[in-house]
Image 1 (cartoon, rainbow, N blue to C red):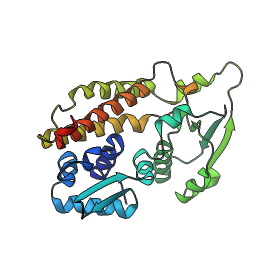
Image 2 (cartoon, rainbow, N blue to C red):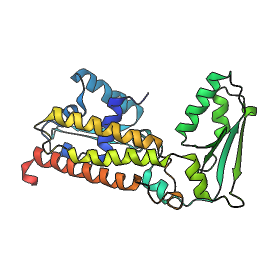
Image 3 (cartoon, rainbow, N blue to C red):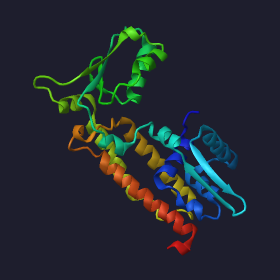
Image 4 (cartoon, rainbow, N blue to C red):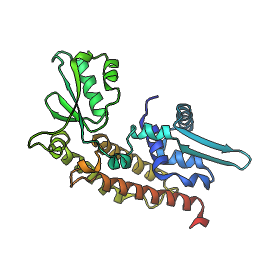
Length: 266
């Protein structure tokens, strides 16, 4: 199943807030429906079933107690984050080796070039120069994945390398990723958090609009970020600041959901 916008938004909401409100809300499904904003109950229920079939969400439906609670699974978290945990990535102990990919594909091989480019960006490789791309991550069956794209494996070369001479790892980082653009996106995202809705359950349309915009803004920055380990991050990097701000904003949002659903919690 492809992770479409609505499914992504739902997983994002469950992951970022923990959505404790569902344990106290009178109509927990309505909370999700209003927040993410489906076009109909039928589409909403279909999406939930598909996510459950994929193993991305699980739920408890206790008819005797009248409770219904949904949660994101570990598989759902990996699908949402594309197997990138920001905090784990930043704290990762790097082995000081770069993995490089170089390729030799003819200009006329447009399909192969497009597929390879998409694969490199999905894997968050940095474009060092020309046909040379780099990653700080350990090698993991990449050649097999390239072959599955029906690209001649002889046209792609993987190697390990370390800087020599006057070159430094920071030079590799600066040349391979556009952190000016990444930081600009994170800065825009941080600024957008100031518009977090003050009312939630009473104004479903406003919350839905804010949430969709927030999720889209975050994903734009998230997709460009290579999530380098701490020792490789530029001093100006704003990813950590944006991540902390987002977690704080969603924690507050979840708390408002809960208190509005059950005023006795205030």
